[in-house]
Length: 224
Image 1 (spheres, rainbow, N blue to C red):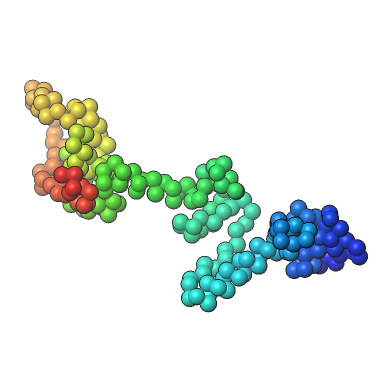
Image 2 (cartoon, rainbow, N blue to C red):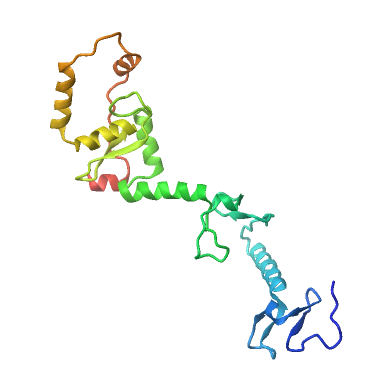
């Protein structure tokens, strides 16, 4: 502990902090107009430690849960969403926070962004999507070959129709949901029948029943 030299406890430039017993420049003390020198009684670091300690003591007295303090090494930051210490490389930068990093790590922001997109665009929750996938055996509602990974909806009414793979979703997009275009495509393919041994996918097509998906979320039902 650094002891103050006589006459330097408060000379208008330095001040003694009674908690750590260290003489520090006035810039290390917060402002407090109620005191004669216009600065806080304790230095900023000691004031922060005191505030944290008192907060935890009050929380325990009130029966509230208090998160145990986690050691955060240099170059890392605590993510309150996933409750883990994440290196700075795993954070988006922002000028709106004191430390220059976002309030949640990149992984948590990605999950939150996907959830918000589902709700904002389709009125669905991740649980709704999971029920749709289970109803379709996690297969595309058109080809029934590839995993379903995209929500398909009517671009005019906004009604959700089911889950499709990327290629089938693009197929409907290029056809602009026009049944006439798709029927014409079927007729075109029938004019040029495939020659060769049957594919394994053809057998899977016969085995998988027609997939029907009904209304799921309350928002979906209101729109339909």
